[in-house]
Amino acid sequence: MAAFDEMNDGRGIRAPYSGIARYLASAGAEALEAKRREAEILFRRIGVTFAVYDQGGDPERLIPFDVIPRVIARDEWERLRRGLEQRVRALNAFLADVYGPRRILKEGIVPAELVLKNEGYREAMEGFTPPGGVYTVISGIDLVRTGPEEFFVLEDNCRVPSGVSYMLENREAMVRLFPSLCAAHRIAPVGHYCEELLETLKSLAPPACTGEPTVAVLTPGPFNSAYYEHSFLADEMGVELVEGADLVVQDDTVYMRTTAGPRRVDVIYRRVDDEFLDPLAFRPDTMLGVPGLIAAYRAGRVTLANAPGAGIADDKAVYPFVPAMIRFYLSEEPILQNVPTYVCEQEEDRAYVLDHLEELVVKLARGSGGYGMLIGPHSTADQRATFAQRIREKPGDYIAQPTLALSTVPTLCENGMAPRHVDLRPFVLFGKNQVRMVPGGLTRVALREGSLVVNSSQGGGTKDTWVLEENPPPTAQSMEGGAMEGAGMSQSLGGMTQTARKQG
Image (cartoon, rainbow, N blue to C red; front, side, top):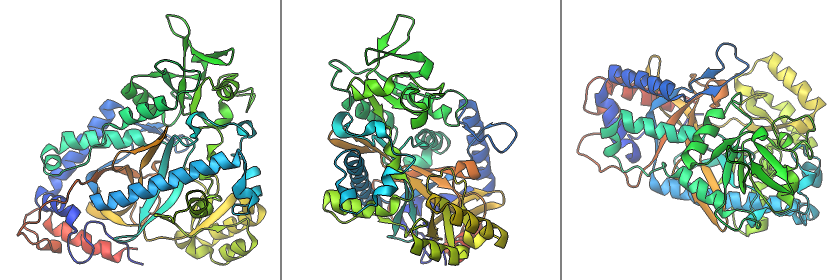
């Protein structure tokens, strides 16, 4: 199956990419490579790193940044924005329901055992409503594209989604490296994300907060893979970055230790997983959490974003039921579609998956980072046999999906430009009576030829994502394949887009 190329759809350069195509046709390979090296120096100087602990060598390494942006038209983004808001509202309603009256379970729309026996379900949240009724304050929703109008939600991230700092740093890098190219396009800004995040967090201050809310970012510490992002967001919001040892709970109130004495904390943007938040409520051996934090939360004296237990909403085995949630809670038809999904715990689905492993992508229902996956078309017989045995032994741990022909975009590779598969993670902020989004998100790119795995932990890279306020004006210059004017990159650009139409 041929992949849809977002720059050249087979009939010529698509309108959103016309300015990029002209630049690539005239820039020259050496100039682009020089920009790539400059970007690497810039990111290394700033310290934009991501730790990968199981691959040997230096765990602090750069996420590869591709200097060719991914471009989305404004009308395309508006549809995505409406679909994302709809989806996050439904996921939040689902969480409020399953920790409350459980209507969707009682009516059999979502199997009760799928939720109540889920390892992400938190009994400590039963009968409790977070401030503002918001569980999913920050969500990262992964989208893939397969055609001009075809966008699918690949998965929902409602626990502690990461990657937004790379979205922001990528834009800063592009403006510094390509000021004229950026100025020639009306690109919707993303730099106000941290302001929107802070306002969202403040809007959800607990009932006990009577003045200006004090916000803090709770991190597991510098050994966490996303520590750069934690410190970046705290710095950009102008709030304190704290570890568990910096906080103490007294009389169901959370205080931060400071040189001037204890200071009350009202809202905690926590980047610590549920089970490590509070040794009195979850894992008793955790050294990362704060004793009494959940009691303070339930007493209405502090807000946690995201709410503990939100992970059941992004479980991959729950994912197939999100369209039904939208219909059930919002009485609307889904704007964005799911990828067809087989839940291996269901006997009929499991039988189909076992018979079609060579065609499917098999994932851990509660996995992340691209680990524990089988990509059937690229697998060996031994790998399929191993996964078949795992599925038979623990069917509830796995789901499977058809292999999609993810869209491609031009990417600077070792041997010049070539099409590479991408996904998109927009970040949705859900505050009191308001959903906020900056236009775009984090585009992740699979740098290996033919690879569909975009995760940074699996060798993927990132791109800046441009949402255009309007498409660049057309020119008299021909935009058909390699017929564009300009030297240097013109032949490779035409060849690359031909290759894109052949790849699947």
